Image 1 (tube, rainbow, N blue to C red):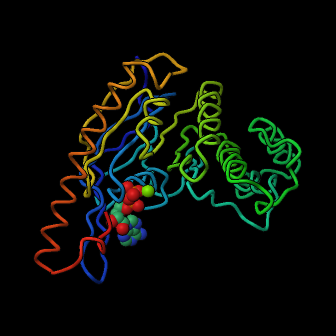
Image 2: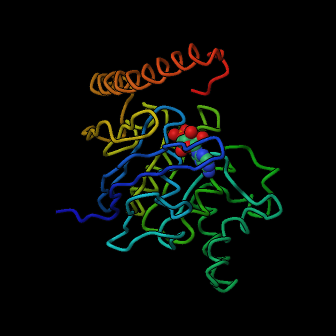
Image 3: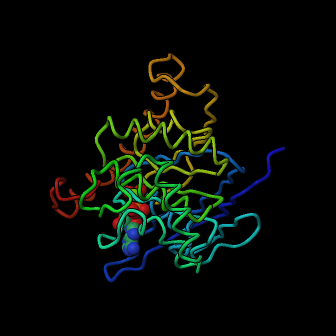
Amino acid sequence: MKSKCLEVDGISKHYHLPKGVIHALEEVTFHVHEREFISIIGPSGCGKSTLLKIIAGLDKPTKGQVRLKGEIISRPHPRISMVFQSFALFPWRTVLQNIEFGLETRGVPKRVRRKIAERLAETVGLKGCEYCYPRELSGGMKQRVSIARALAIDPEVVLLDEAFSAVDEFTAQVLRSEVIELWEETEKTFILVTHNLAEAIEMADKILVLTSRPAKLKHMVTVNLKRPRSRHRPEFVKLQRELFELLKEELEKTIIRHKLKSIYSQEKIDDIEM
Ligand SMILES: Nc1ncnc2c1ncn2[C@@H]1O[C@H](COP(=O)(O)OP(=O)(O)O)[C@@H](O)[C@H]1O
Ligand SMILES: [Mg+2]
């Protein structure tokens, strides 16, 4: 029996704004086993990033709990790290200094953290760029730095928020296979949020499908395909079509709701965020 690593238990999140309340998440419950690779998909704006931020302890739920091996997450946790779509690197720090950041805040001595950063820079293919600044790097290289930074603290859980969406498709493909290798080598638990269905199927053991906002768990599917997974195999294509239908239902709901809203408030549909 695999043991539960992360438990997301009845998470709701409401943002209180001057204009009213935004219900981002409603009673989201699931758990992730140790060393599992989970993908979370859902329509744009449904609450995926909010969910990841809550798991990372960067935001607080209105209701519910996230637990890592039984411990409630209420602030950024040393065993959980996150990779952002926008890289979120410090422009004034070199590659090595960026990778070292989490170790530095934990008080790891300079020589030790430099060694770890150098090893990780090499692991993610940044040898020769250790003293470059982010402005000197391509998007793919920047994302390698943030992946190395996330791994530097030796987390149990790595969260990836649309981590391959800001780079070109070829680079994304290379990064995806590298992340799968890292996952296999490091035996960590990975959670990837993505709007890219093929990416979710290619990488994950299990895919969670969220509804449009407020995000609830709509469906969960186990991906029983051997890695590396070819996007052309009939089972792959079939699963992709099934997931597409599920997401289409959600998008249609959003569009109908917006259309009605626009009829009542005389707003133009183009002005409304999907
Ligand atoms: N800090 C915040 N304050 C207010 N509203 C927010 C905040 N973060 C996210 N939201 C709102 O919550 C909803 C879900 O956002 P998000 O989690 O970023 O969606 P996704 O990642 O699925 O595209 C959106 O309507 C967004 O505007
Ligand atoms: Mg997002």
